[in-house]
Image (tube, rainbow, N blue to C red; front, top):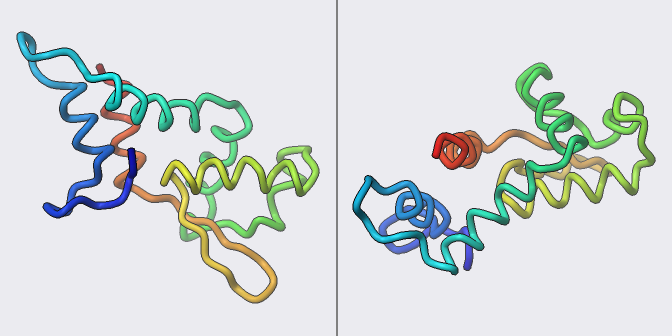
Length: 120
């Protein structure tokens, strides 16, 4: 299932979360919707990725260059790049190329979805 916007502007993931978090007495979440929500949770279920999200959130303008992450994380650049890719693929971070470096910013809507799922 994609996280791209549907015809009504909502992502399929947000629709899945709405069905997952429906009120009492409604149908249980479908397997397909559960897999979508699980992918989001899997992306944040890693200590390094949680650290990255925290570093970006606390950075000026809530953005960070990939070149600035290996030292505070104590990891090699390829490992940091792997974790950044997982977060971008989950839609939690947006990536922007500036010269030879990639800069990352938070995607507030996706973080809100993660919070909504965790409140279940």
